Structure formats: C-alpha cells, structure tokens
Image (cartoon, rainbow, N blue to C red; front, side, top):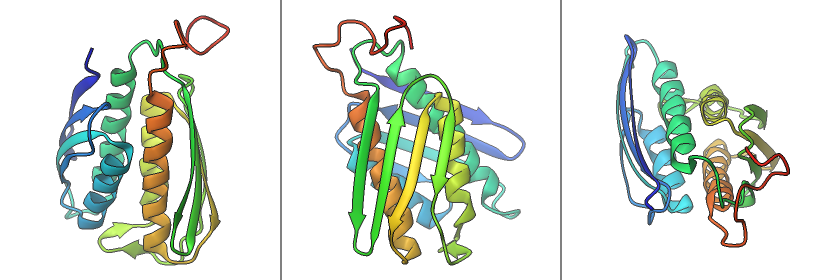
Length: 195
C-alpha cells in the first residue's frame, strides 16, 4: 500500500501545496521562492529517498519566516499522514552526517510526542536568502506537526552552508530509517500497543 500524501495550507501569509511519497526514489520538484531553502529540501528528498513536490507562495516581501515555518508545518503533517497508525515501522532512526568540516547527529523517535532539541552554532545571519535562525524554526514546526521527538546536534564544523546541509541530510537519513517497514514488527514498536 503506497504511503503517499498530499497536504495544503492556505493562510493570509502563505499558500502551500505538498505531495509526499515516503517510499520514493529521491525525486523532488521544489519551489518556495527561497533558493537556499529549495536546495536544502531537494537534499532532504534525495538523501531520504522521498519523492516530494512543494509549491509555496509566501509573503517574502516581509521576510522568509512565514514561508519556511509553514513548509515545516505542512511537511510534518505529510509525514504523520504517511506513517498512519505506524504499524510495522521501526519508529526510531538516527544518523551521523559528515560534510567536509561539519559533523551533525540527528536522532528521531516517531513517538507521537513532539519535542525538539536543537544545538547548532551558526556564525552568519543568513546563507543565501535564508536566515540561519529559521533552520531551528523549520525543524520545530516539523517536529510538532509530525508528533516527532527530534534531536539535532552539531558535533563539529564552522562553515554555515555545510552545517545546515548536513542537518537536512542527517534528518533525511534518520527519518528514512525510522519509517522503514520491518516485517518482524507485526503491530507497533511499543509496549503500549499504540504509538
């Protein structure tokens, strides 16, 4: 059964449509109007082997905050819908991602309980037209919309582009691991019987 979702969000600040296939091959078509953010979302799709189309129109004349946060909300909702009742999935995923000087740890629990621990030190205000402070806001939105326990930690690195890209790639690989269906898991990975 295909784990494919489509989510839309329309507010006075943004208009976003996202198609998401959690069992894809890494194909993406992304247009948020924020070049570096598009690059990060393309990396996320490619390295997680997710198929994803995003068309986002936001109030970029204000700044990029609303667009980036709302894409996070929509992506979190798509992930939550794609895993459904979570039967058979591994639930947990982790990755340590190197990218040149950068080394990032990401760990995920699809527990149904939102929580974000984010430890990264950026030394510039922006990369391209994306504010570096919005990286954390994006992942907070994903975590809370998906009901995901998410830990992201910078182990080393100084180049802001490398750090952010390693974060998105590590998240992709950890999410791919957590959402894989394991034939040995006949119900859900919990002693409670539900997640």
